[in-house]
Image (tube, one colour):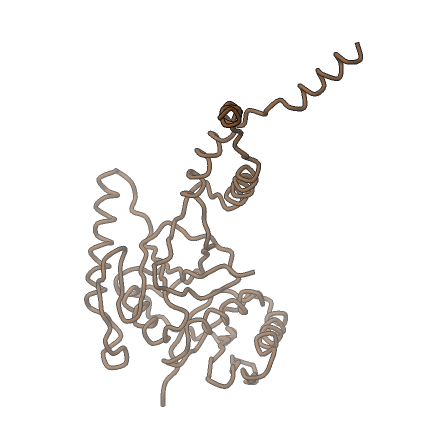
Length: 157
Length: 151
């Protein structure tokens, strides 16, 4: 009984050294990958982007993702290409969505009293995607007035 | 005297460092940095498509019209005033040899020639991006894409 009381009265010291080590390493790692302006383009989930040595930073633009046979503009699926080889080059539903997006951009810019930004678009596509689908998407973008196109890639050393 | 000095030294060693302010700082900093961290580094390859109304064809005989055709087994390099050459894609170092060939063509030109990548319908997107990279590294100018005819 006496012995127990003596043990309880001892101050309990939490060993913080290992936790501090982890936090210090984590802090340094996160500081290294810190980007002050945030991400302009976020890679769509389920996509394996192609690798490239390009170091050009993405610009703020309309983002179009080609996942499997679906084409998404922002968060919305705007077109499904069942057979890329059977139809013509133009994807009608995508062209409509792009044109309405462009019109919205112009209206918003005018309301703010600014000049509308140039029609810029970033395409995210899977590295295994066939050229035929990319060609149709790019042709549709061109027809909808988006001439300045960027292809999103993963930066490799 | 000596005894008193020894005791004060022991007290100094046993003093605990108050790390709670540092812990508080870490607890705030780490979630903030986790939210703004970029784990996947994205970049872009820029392309300028011809305008919808631009139908003018490039008939200038002095323009090189350099093209690389991505075939299943080989790369074919062609252009005006150039003898078409091919590089076996199955051999090791095919990309390096394509780079050397394009860099040699670039050296022989005073103006920066553009590059047209001709791809069949089933060409992989990664292969097209690789050729675009090689063209940029070789010092070529604007890249354009074209579909290869199947017949």
